[in-house]
Amino acid sequence: MELVEDPTNGSVTFLQNSWNNLLDTIGDDPEFLYVWALTTWVNGFFWVFGGLFVLMDVFNGPRWLRKYKTQPGTNEPLEWDGLLRVAKTILFNQTMVGIPLTYIGFHSAGRTNLPNVRVLPTAFEVLRDLCVCLFFAEIGFYYVHRFLHLRPLYRYVHKKHHEWTSPFAWTAMYCHPVEHVISNMLPPIIGIHLMKSHLATATLWFTLLIINTIRDHCGYHLPFFPSPEYHDYHHAKFTECFGTFGYLDLLHGTDKQFRKSKQHLRHRFLWTTQSARELVPDK
Image (tube, rainbow, N blue to C red; front, top):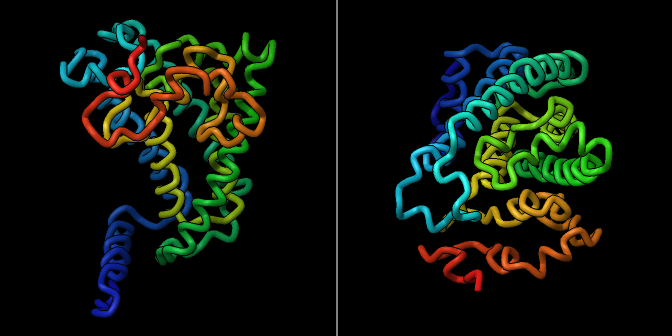
């Protein structure tokens, strides 16, 4: 399928033509796209993007980036046995848990009233759906996360994720299978199902989610990259900062100690190459 070039709206036409060329190559069967193609993209992007940070931990370099570590002296270098243990758990969650749940979800609730996959959504539709997804994901993650910190759920489920008090990028998906379902998979998918979002919107949403969770767990507060100090503090202390952006923590008062900490002072966007620890020293 090929669209005619519209000189008054060239960029939109280019995107639509490129999208159709992609679908001509891989096919436009909804089950294949929403289950298999989307899963492959999300999981693959997680490994590759997170792997960039993991390589810095494994090889303990480059040296000029070490000053951006949020918890200096940890994972320097990252030990292979810990890395392999994390990788095995992630692969299990992605394949044995994630794929079946995605397949069941698509056939039970996701395949009806889907938009025409050949027609890209408008910018307004994408922004609208992303806002809805963000709203439900933040609420879902915060309350599920607090729930998982209650006994005995913490002991038998969530404690696995907290084995890493100084996380590295791939630990974002290192967790008990139950947690992977109720925390990692269900909250982010609510908005997509409610809005019957287009595949392109879903792909963008899950890509942004992976970037955000890798940022939270990467262990590096890099210049020109959003701060990970908030969630890093949660891993170090366990008792506060249950949300992603902090609004619900502020509402419920679950960030009081964080706001008195050095990490709070460092929780800023770095506009220069000066590190957060140089801006706010320990002493």
